[in-house]
Every structure is written in C-alpha cells, then in structure tokens.
Image (cartoon, rainbow, N blue to C red; front, side, top):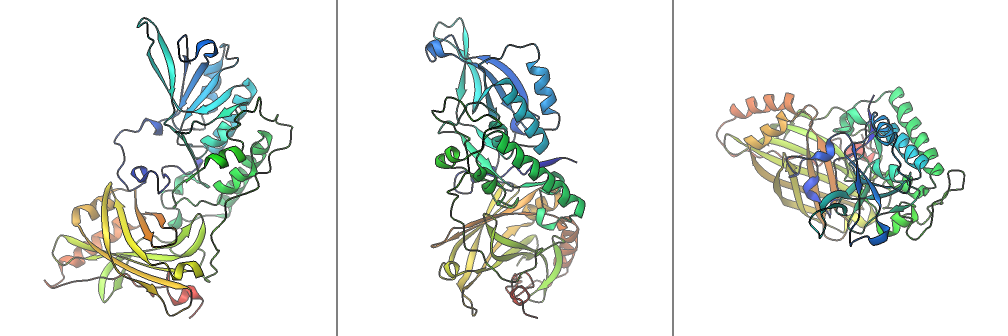
Length: 440
C-alpha cells in the first residue's frame, strides 16, 4: 500500500493557485517520480573557490526512490556534495530510507531548482540554484538527512499529516479499518525515531501531525525552520544520529479547542441526495477546522437553479467558541475544476446558543461547472471563508458519491416546474445543528 504525507495543497494566504480545485498549471513535472542529476556549480565568478558539486533531486518520493538514488551514487565521488530538493513529498518509508542514505554519504542539503547556464566566457556552462522552489510533505523530513542544511528565504517548506495515500483525496468520507490505523501509527513511530536519529526538532512532527488532509499545508516560518533544525544556519555540522535531538519547544499557539459533542465522522458517506426547503438537493457535510482544531461544521448543498441548466450552491456553517461568535464571515469562495465562484453571504450572525455563529451564503453556477466536478473522479472542490476578526478557513471537499447523486438531481431538476427555485443548505441538519450539540 502506498502511504504518504498528503500533498497538493499550499498555504491559503500565500499560494491559492495550487490548491486542489483551484486554478493550477497544466504541466507539473514535480508530480513525476523523483529524478537525480549531477551538476557543477563552477568554475565561475559566482562561487569562486567555493564552487560545489550539486545533486538535483526533483519530483515525488516513491518506494523506489531510495533504490534509484543508490544506483545514481554508485561509483561516484560525491564528497562534499549538496543535494538540492524540489519535491511535493510522497512515500513515508521511501523518504526515511532516502534521508538515511543521504546522511550515510555525508551530503549537505538545501531547497531549490538546479539550472545550467552559460558562464561569462560563453564557452563553458555552470550550474546555479534557483531558490524559488518548494519542499512539501515528506520532503522536509528527507532534508534532515543532510549533515548541513540551508533553506533560502525564497524557498517554501510545507508540512501535513501522514495519511493513507489511496484515501487522501476525500479523507472525511473514506472508511478505515483497524489495520489501517495500525499502519499509520507504525509509520508515525518510524518517523519519530528517524527525526530523533537525524537530530531534528520535535516541533516539526508536532506541527505536521496536527494538519488534516482537507486543510492547506502548513508553511514553516524562518524561526520554525531554525527551531526544528531544518535550517542549521551557521552550524558547522549537525548532531550525529546518536546525539540527543533538539526539543523543539516554543510551538505555535493553538486555537481554542471546541467541545461541541459532535460525531467524529460528520459525513462518512460523502455526497448524498436529500431535501432542502422541500426541494431535491445534493448535500455534503464536513468538519470545519483550523490547523486540525475543530471550530464547528458546515454543509454544502447543490440544488436546482432558477432556470434550466443552472444550479444553486448554498453554504451553511456553525462556528463555536468565544472568539468566533463576534467575528462574522464576510466572504465565501468556491474553487471547482480550476474555476472560482464567489457566493453571496446572506447572513452571518450570532445564534441563540452563546458562543455560536451561523452563516449562510448562496450563489448560482452553470451546469457545465457542476458536471465537470461530477466527471472528475479524483478531484475536489475547495471552500474558503474570510472572517472579520478571526482567521479564515480553507477546506478541501472530495467528490465521493457526487457523480451518482448528480444524475438523480439533474433528472429531478428537469421535472421541476418553471418557477423560482431556491435550495438552502440546512443550518439545523445533523452535521451542524441540534444533534451535534448533543441534543436529540
């Protein structure tokens, strides 16, 4: 089974363009299996007498990557070389084995893209590191294998939870067995031991393991890179595998935990047909979280539009917590199949129960957009909310059950009379209403 730290999402406030469900490049070589190549930084005026031997490592880490790396380094003199990563992550076990191999060779590590360009004399070529690159998911843990580690200010290092690779596209709707939990926890244990062996900070694991797969990846700050020992800065050499690891204290402040009495699986079956305001609709319920801390729940409903060939999408959420009740939601955006739809916020106000905020938003979309989501078996839509005073949310919702329900909804809409139709998500559905508060 392929197991990985989930990739494909980026930090909400920095790079919305690479979100699943948001606009993204047509060709992305970083999703191919990792490839290695050897480059010489000099001779050249840029590095002088300090030119390095560079190994570019770009692409996804697979179970075969450690073997590919072993074949690449065989019979090569790589003393003092630096391996340069540009990767979206991948296999947990593959990353651990690759990191240990890098440490065994005594290589330094950094993040970037290696490019060959002509030197000033025009006759020779030299390699340069373009720093605007990313190291995501399991890639930061591979970085720990370097005996020296440096992260350029322009580079981005992002982390996420370990998840079963075949269920990360719609983690909230998937089913899990006891064996699945054993596999994940075993891999976490191996990752903990590896991080300690490499001299990494425990904060790296703490941050990564609190970000669920439906949220954007967490980008590490410069201070966090230093505390987690991913960037050793002016250190002459990192700790040896037998030395005690950095404790990684000073973790970021967490949001207040909400004890709302909700079920652990708000929506185990994905999208399903239901009635909203007496009309047919497809509905999906999902936890509302910020860095893994549950602050409430929401429902997205797709119903018949006012005219044939259109659909109305409504979004309803309930947030809980003292800091949430006084901060209204001012914007709700959806990304579906690379296209953006902004919903009109109908209301966002404190509810009858103290510490609750209820929000309702609505917007019309074309049938082509809804059909494209139904046809994308492994894709998702992304919901972003922007609040007045508290942090916004960014949640990726999979399309489990959407294609099956869409055929039924399309048939029902064709049979509707030619009149104004409005289908509202239900603020008091089981996912966001009384049952979640522990009521009947």
